[in-house]
Length: 405
Ligand code: 3PG
Ligand code: MG
Image (tube, rainbow, N blue to C red; front, side, top):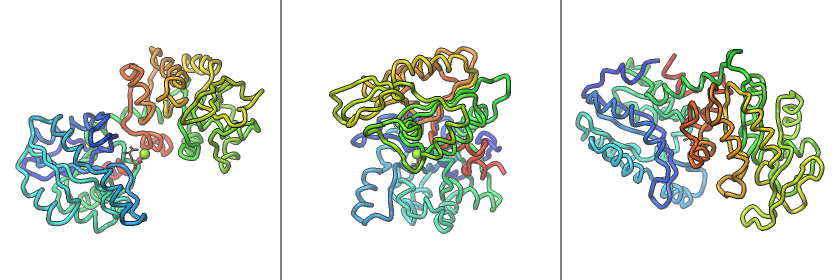
């Protein structure tokens, strides 16, 4: 794959797709990790004297909703505060923001760039053609650029206009397309959990978080690649239900019960043996530890974390591993009363000395950061969905394949 460092782009307009889908509270960025992660590529382009045009999506915009709802979503997912944060991180460059996603306003903003300037464009999802990979939209965006760099690892599983449509067109026109430093680093690290040679086993995957169906295909491919797949979080309750246990008010996905049974039958799936449950998710007052197989979750209660016995069993399994992939917390870790499970698996991974350990994005990365263990992992991916799909698709993602082939 061509890398950003190989590009000759002095005085040229380079469209770089980044993943600036970052959390914000009241117009202030609460976690700038993804912006920081894209800086090496942006600085490389500035150093080469390119005119840098950055595009990213932010949040979700459902164009099928009523116009006033769409307007509300646009307001909530305005990219302007991200430009402010980016400007702080790049004091050496002139950073501007373009509130238009296409048309004369965008063209003029690009035309106004000098070599080494950076322009951040408004949220790509303001355009309803973005998620449909609309050819007209891709054509218009491609017409602005002399070259394209893909550095949005977190969005590389989306075949959208800004991730796939634009580089396809530019490649067809014989223009330069490349991956950035972040994508390069992510791909190199994640390939090590996609293909795991015998001497890097045991390979243990840890999956948590809310939904089974979101992660369904990945469990299937993980049981083939791994020695053990450790399950925690809300998704464990669909497995418990499949086993016929009482699960109280815990979330479950009825249409995934057969699949859960099939996964259990592989003999590789480990489920919690005890659980921390509470009488309410939003305002827990009565908190209990239960033996799920013996007692089930009491009526009116729901699962909030894995229990103390499970923590020990999981930590002991992780301690044997030479390769670990972790995606999703074991419980509602944002609340200290339900953080012990996530802390235990995080600690067990952090203690491994001769192992390759990867966190697949999102909540587990925030948990590791919050607990102070982030630096102990071999790789912390900026992409949750992207890293899962990369494993599922044996190392392939549409936004990366388009650059490579
Ligand atoms: C993410 O945060 O998962 C990526 O930025 C992709 O966002 P999406 O799931 O809304 O496509
Ligand atoms: Mg996502």
